[in-house]
Length: 399
Image 1 (cartoon, rainbow, N blue to C red):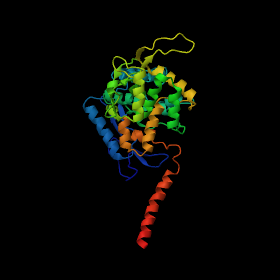
Image 2 (cartoon, helix red, strand yellow; image 1 turned 135 degrees about the vertical axis):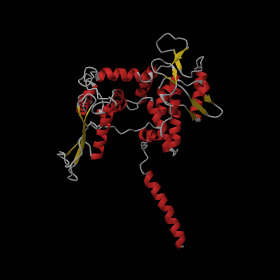
Image 3 (spheres, helix red, strand yellow; image 1 turned 45 degrees about the vertical axis):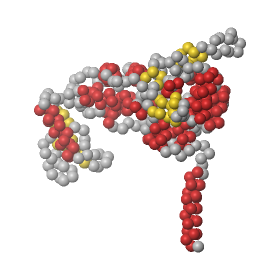
Image 4 (tube, one colour; image 1 turned 120 degrees about the vertical axis):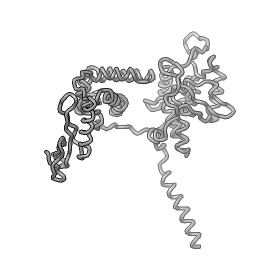
């Protein structure tokens, strides 16, 4: 259509218009020829001004000799490996991303598709095939991977190619995915944490108390040294974490995770007893693998051998969860969750809770802002108390 459906006037050269068949709203697109003489059109846009801007950009690219490389045969998988090689990822993040590319892009129609020809409908078809129940990815995991892997890949390709991708980043359009069904979360109570500490092997009891009383991540807990604890000031410095697999001491993933947390008396007492019974390693590591005497086996010397691995502690923790009768699926991270919920429930400002956890405020509210069991009625009582104060003031004025 060469006539503007809004004004009825003739459109300038290179601009087309139509009325959307379903919404009935006018739409516009620009038309031009690229540096190679091929006809190009923008996507349908809501206003004529946007269409004219797209056409002007295409003409400017033509003047500079830039055109969309639709003949490029680089596939999504090929570019994904190239993209990953240039990213400053940590080892674990790199391995996880590589696993996603290997297991969910390689061998799929989308993975073998040339980057310059990928359409949003193909992304949607791929996502529908990978998400449960047809695929192996949960809706939340798929959303995470789309935002942290696939979308950045197409964004980088759009910047790399002269003139960008012909249709732009195909993931700029929202995909239709199943809603993520989350089970209601009930944080661990103090009684449950104490039961867990009593059920775990004695050499690991302090680890349960420390993680629950300081809100540490598992890697931060395993990396603790004696020198990190300021006993007189009742503070603990969190400056490193133990990397899973390599057991190397590395910096926290983000700067805010390097922090100083307050040391409660209960945690200090548990640490003191632990150090007395199981001396730290030569480098000061508080928690180490110990060969303990076992019933029915030949007694062996209690000798520190090295830092406790993530997998070793997880197995020990899971066995203690069963013995303590805690809900199946309880992990050591639930102790960090317990810490955050207890602070929020005690009225500690969310900014202070975020600082102690090394998280963003919005992260604290989204992840840890759960109502504690038994908190029903607290809101009602707060409002009743406020109105009671107002009522008493009115009575005094009337008297």
